[in-house]
Image 1 (tube, rainbow, N blue to C red):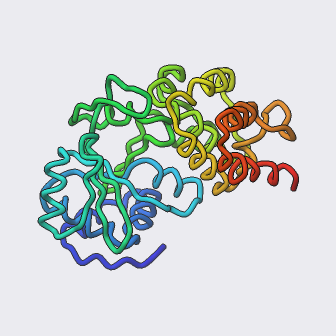
Image 2 (cartoon, rainbow, N blue to C red):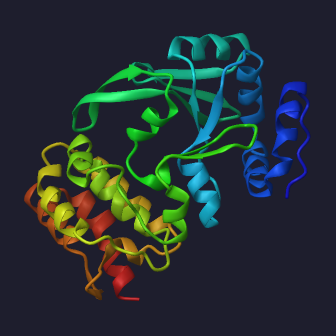
Length: 287
């Protein structure tokens, strides 16, 4: 465990409570050791505003991955988030303000701070939002159970959809109905295959593949080729990238989503996707 020096009484007082739960204490130490995190957390605790770690940072540490990005969920509206950052001379970007997302910038590192919200009238990658005071409603809008875990700065762990258990069982589950979830955001198809790569032996849920392949065709009407390519490239960064690309009936063969995507890239003459992305999959299978 890293030795962390906390120079703020509020943080010290809060983190003392984590002694009762060693695992959560380790998680807190992991996050708080990242430069800039304590500065952000301190700023909001001084204003009595709840700010919790959320999503991928928790997931990654639990599976043994190095934490790349630390995101926060926060119990205040984006206007208030901005005021607190300004008060503490923390730089920020507010291009995602209408979605409640403010990006704090410290030492060239970015931290997304998103107000609790509900999504409605979703249109592919866009949505209308309503800010809420209900953490579970915020969790409900997320894609997978393993991305809907929260950790408060006092070490309390909130897991509304059993994401931690799914991680331990190598399962990747959509929150709610898979059909509705995908129609809310078609990028979730490619995110699903990306996150399969964090498991050595993923347990594929019956019926998922049929639905995912069906909607893969529809996704091209909503997603840009560049966005799809960038999501595919992220798949190579996992411990077990082959699991993002293989056919689970025959792991020596490519998954059908790759064939569908390749045909789309060919039809749209997207050479960058063909020659700087999908060709990397060929190299992986030819090892």
